[in-house]
Amino acid sequence: MTRIRRGYIARRRKTKIRLFASSFRGAHSRLTRTITQQKLRALVSAHRDRDRKKRDFRRLWITRINAAIRGNLVSYIYSRLIHNLYKAQLLLNRKILAQIAISNRNCLYMISNEIIK
Image 1 (cartoon, rainbow, N blue to C red):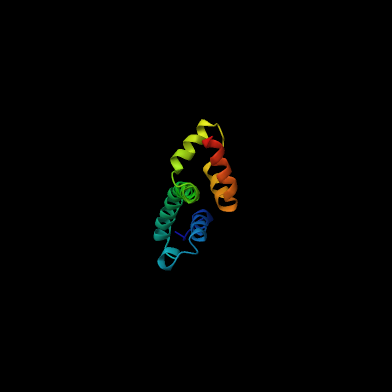
Image 2: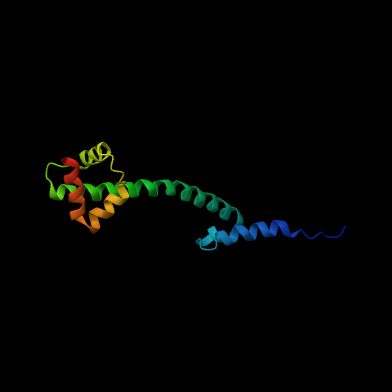
C-alpha cells in the first residue's frame, strides 16, 4: 500500500491552537498537548477574572466614596450615605459617586448635605 497523506483539517486545527498560544513561554507554545492544556487553563482564568474584575472595581468605588465622605463629615459613613440615597430616591450608582468624589468633592458634599436635610 502506498502512504496516504493526512488531510489539512487536523493541521489547520493545530495551527489555530498554536496561534492562540504563540505568546506563551517554553513548551507551552511548542508542544501540542501542553498548548491545549494551557489554552484551557487560560480561558478558565479569563472567565473567572472577568467576574473578579467587577468585584474589584466595586470595592474600589466603595473605598473611594467612603474616604471622601469621612474626610468631610466625621459622623457620616458610607453605609448611611447609600441608605439615605435610596430613601431620597436619588439614582446614582457607586461608579458615578466615586467619580464625583475624585473630581468634584464639593459636589459630593452638597449631595450628602441635601440627603441629610
